[in-house]
Length: 107
Image 1 (cartoon, rainbow, N blue to C red):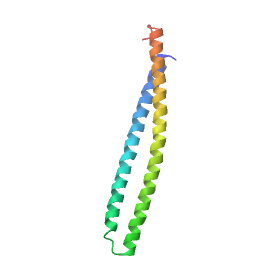
Image 2 (image 1 turned 180 degrees about the vertical axis):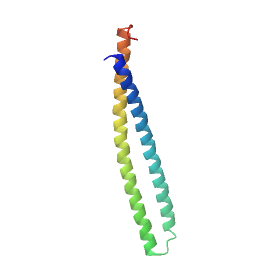
Image 3 (image 1 turned 30 degrees about the vertical axis):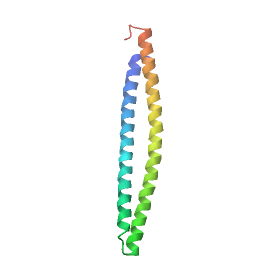
Image 4 (image 1 turned 30 degrees about the horizontal axis):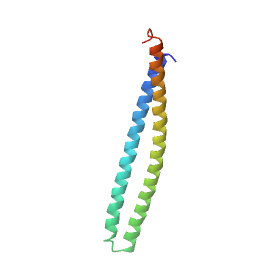
C-alpha cells in the first residue's frame, strides 16, 4: 500500500477515533447526570405527601433507568467500534512503517 494512500487513511482513522472517544465521554456524562437525578428523586420521594407525586417520581426514575440501560448499550457498541478502529490504525501504521523501511526512497 502506497504511503500517499496510507497517510490520509491514518488521518481519517485518527479523527474517527477521537470522535468515538468524545461520544463515549458524552454518554458517560449523560449516565452520571441520570444517576444524580435518580438519587435526587429517591431523596424527594421520602418527602412525597401524595400518591400522585410519588407515582410521578417513580415513573421518572424508571425512565431514567431505561435511559441508563440504553446509554450502556450505546457505550458498549462505541467501545467495540473504537477497538476495531484502533486495530485498523495500528495495522496501517505498521504497514506504513514497513513500507518506509523497505523503500527508503519513499520516505
